[in-house]
Image (cartoon, rainbow over all chains, first blue to last red; front, top):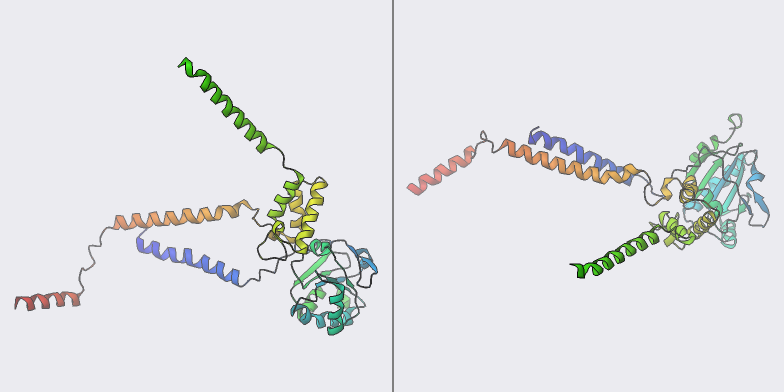
Length: 179
Length: 153
């Protein structure tokens, strides 16, 4: 192999993989972590609502549900997705249960957020130690999990939900006839 | 020689006892606290930038440390504790990659680089100076001739 041939070979052999690695790294949000929960049973949990009422995953069994991890300090992402969640609850609340879970937040601050941006009426739950968010593998709010009627996690949204994403994720947990 | 024998024997005895003590201490099973700390140092704090669970003060890190303590106290071995968190966060939660192939990649890159360098240098040495390549371009040749003639004049 001549030096010239080797030189021409070295260029693609070194430049192409390095460029590919850089492009792949810059194009990827490091916060987006693929969830190993997809296709597996959703974690079981028990807690209380902000109003102090006990609630657990068993109470949601038998119909699809959405678990949205959020916080009042999560700006602007949680503010941006708030109307999307409210609209989905209004449109599909009769078929899909929706719950919010506070991520490292206080009920006082969460209440102020809901007073300011609107309370859609679905319950918001406490996770004082963070055990529920760890069981769901939450890295940071907002993250939303879509669980079907059999209790299987079908989709996860990392970051704020937009209307199109909400529709796509809802389609994974709603029975075909009711979409 | 015989005079030095007790000294040599004492030296060997001290060395053997020291080695045995070191091995025994090294082989002693770590305590539950040491295991928990070590496992915490292996896991990524979910809501931090590049910190381990052991080094982070966040609520998530505290809860993971508490769960590690609970699992260790419950008899889980190290791999079971790691698997507990990998099942929730995926391999991302481990600060060090678990796949052995990943550790090999830097060495492969270095070996390929050195091999490319060696092959390149060998090819250059084999080729030697290019006899067919003109030493001077026609323009340079003209200039040399003109300057030589100017000097002669």
